[in-house]
Amino acid sequence: MISVCKDLIQFELLRKKITSRNIGLVPTMGNLHLGHLSLIEKSLKDNDITIISIFVNPIQFAPNEDFEKYPRTLERDLELIRQLHAKNFCEKKVIVFSPKKIKDVFSKGFDTTISIGGPLTKKLCGEFRPQHFAGVTTVVYRLFSITKPKVSYFGQKDYQQFQIIKKMVDDLDIDIKLTMMPIIRDSAGLALSSRNQYLKNEDKDHALDLPTTLIQIEKEFHQLGFQKAIDKFSFLKEDKINDQSWQYLEILDSETLDLASEKSEKILLAGAKYVGKTRLIDNRIVAVSHV
Ligand code: AMP
Image (cartoon, rainbow, N blue to C red; front, side, top):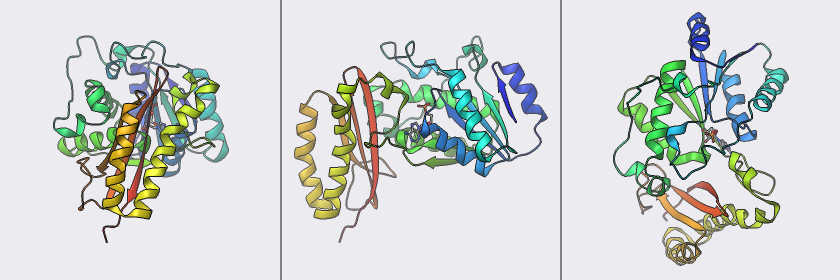
């Protein structure tokens, strides 16, 4: 059974009736694609009840970003959820929480920000979107407090976001398990994103430079070993960053997000690139050997 709650009162009435502790939450901003659906499918498999939130969170967008034009496609999203549910999970309960009004998430006078300090929020996307992660942690905390799940699902696509939410959960001792799911890509290798639909056909090659570059760096780690690959990377990085379309290209320790070093067991290759006005991000996690 699928219930759709478009306001908080309706959702809370339903939530109070749930006795099972076995609840999975999938927070989204809607305009669902196969990446989102992989998270929903995992939650359906793992839990008695899956709550999917669909909320375009205003406080994670800067004034010059695409909050207004962000694609809102609720009816299509509900249809995709219905199809997935009907395929293998008819006996599982799904609640879609898609509040129409911002005040259903941030009540009138809401004046709290959950902000993670330290370098975790300052590098990669944080350097270029300084308020973004505080907007994300605040909305995710709020969604946790409204929905009270046992486990919540996120995509590796937003790897830094996942690490920041993990830090919030650890620091505030929140009793919710976090699960990260792999990046789903299109047949050409571009990570699926709601923003891909801003791309025109002729932008495709330009966009594919992002995943292709990350794959090339990964290959070099396997072929050349850690130090030689790092040395070679510094030239590539200079080239890319000189090309104005790249915002960042970094190799970091995947656990600490500090610069990758001889101590790093796994490294994060992360990039952000503009294709026209559309900003794309992507990453790969690579196990490295130092011998
Ligand atoms: P969004 O609607 O963009 O806020 O994304 C909601 C969730 O879906 C986040 O946890 C994202 O990391 C995840 N997600 C977005 N794109 C993908 C993808 N291509 N593969 C896997 N997960 C994704």
